[in-house]
Amino acid sequence: MSHDKTDEVVAYIRRNGGHAKGWFHEYRDPKPLDASALASLTLPDGRPLPPSLSTWLAFDATWFDLLIGSPPRLDTRPLRDILMGWAKAASSALPEGYEDPYPMTDEQAVQAWIELLPDPAMADALAIELPAADQDHILLFHRADRSGEYPILGCHKRFEFWFKYESFGAFLAHYFGLAEPD
Image 1: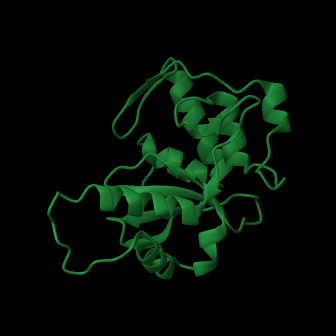
Image 2: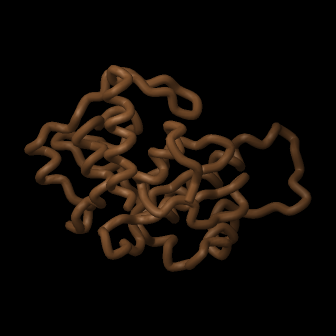
């Protein structure tokens, strides 16, 4: 169960004095979300947080930039908006004078990515970008499993999308070196 994976990660970090090495960063001194703020935190549409995310925020609310504002709320946006950000970043990164042999508008690039999703309806689901490594990771609030967990999409070179982790807890376990992807 993914909630247990989050518990394992938290226990591991606590045994290491609140220090942990992730893929590219070393983290120190976790700062939990205030219990009253956590108790009132939901997804923007009122759905409850997945158990693994609640467990993590009770341990640390700062390492992954999951929250914004005061009072804190999840930094979610539709997956379509995340993809548009990727398209704009890619088009602005082209060298001056470069002529793309296969030109696409940002909207066309987003539509092409949507067609690569496991289910195109995911494009309108709320999502959070998670730390990337050689792949992008997106916590997707599309369809929860029976335990209330949501999957993490993996995206390789912004071309291929698949369900990489069953939950945020499974992502954390891999991120901190305690498990391989599901």
